[in-house]
Amino acid sequence: MAHTTQPIEVQAEELGPCHHKLTVKVPAARIAEEYDHSYQAAGKNLSIPGFRKGKIPVEMLRTVLGDQVADDAKQHLFEHVVRDAVTQAELVPLRVVNFDMDKYEVDEEQDLEFEVEVETAPNVELPDWDELDVIPEPVVIESEQVEAALQDIKNRSPRFDEAEEGQGLDSEHAVEMDLVYVKDGEDGPDAQDIRLGLDAPLYGVEEDEWTEKMNGAKVGDEIELSCTFEEGFSKEDWVGENGSVKLTVKKVIKPRAATDEEIAEEAQLDVEELGTKLKERMEAEAERNERNRQADEMLQQILDKRPFQLASNMVEEETKHNMEQQVQQAVQQGADEDEVRQQVEERREEFAAAADQRLKSYFLVRRIAQEEGIKVTKNEMQQALRAISRHHGVDVKTVEKVYTEQGRLDDVASDILTGKVRAFLMKKVEEKHGAVEGETAEA
Image (cartoon, helix red, strand yellow):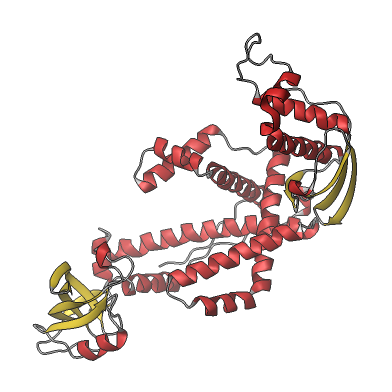
């Protein structure tokens, strides 16, 4: 539908970085035309004898529809006028803020004046690529690093040797046990071969009772502990109730780090191959980290050479969002909400700086993509969706449907675009300095 040619008057005032106030004057004739558009849209499928659908005169539509369209017409007016005002002010808008159209009375026979605040995209300037100089650092993996990494793997892959006869549970041992939950004399869910230590109470059991009754437990002991069936318990109708859990100790075991031979056997390698493969994996990871460091430094050098500012409201909202996420994550892990909020509030400046940096990187990446013609293709989107479908074990059409309904396709495209821009920056470093091969040490 063609828009009106009735002009509006716009005065723009800068309130701060990327934050503008527009004072807009709308003539009555423009208001009437916008309202006409709304009535015509509302009556598009209306049937009135003697008229074809979509061809009913607006005067008749106003009579038939009356005030039914008033709210839609008002919203239509402000949406179109604000859009045109932003264009007339030569701004690149991100969003309208602090605007409530209900504050304004609209009369089709009178001119209208209103104010609206607009946040805009930052003006991001790019330097010549020759102005940037990121020095690649060689990737060097020493034998000591490989040994330390292997030891960490062995520590995180413990083996359990059965303790000597008569050994009781203590701080150096664990137990292997069967258990059954009980409430009001009724047996509930059970489990076998559960491994727990003295410092790892069973979920729902008070720590003090666990320590008191389990300390010194031996093979064959049968122990009953009070238990609260907390959120996530498999028998949902028991959640929030109290009962008990009956344990039978089957083994007392002593954890130890795995040996080189045991880890190699799990990986279907011999011990020498294990060290070689581990070193290759560490080198590949270190090379990825180095290339990511190069991209990060390229972005930072651009920000240092061509700084720009963001709307303060945008940074503040991002800061609050990230702080709240931190609080909720900690609360879900069992932390006290009031304590966490206080700790997070004490780090507000840190969160604000991180939010500012993240948002600036976001706009900078998109400016580079625009300048260099970097785009996300349909094929790349499909590849990403297929990867997500494989990860979740569902078909790609289901993933696409869910992501579309949740409005998350833009996030997928954003991640792809960011990756392509970072790869472009890494390529710029390589073009300037060549690929730097790391010196390697024997593992």
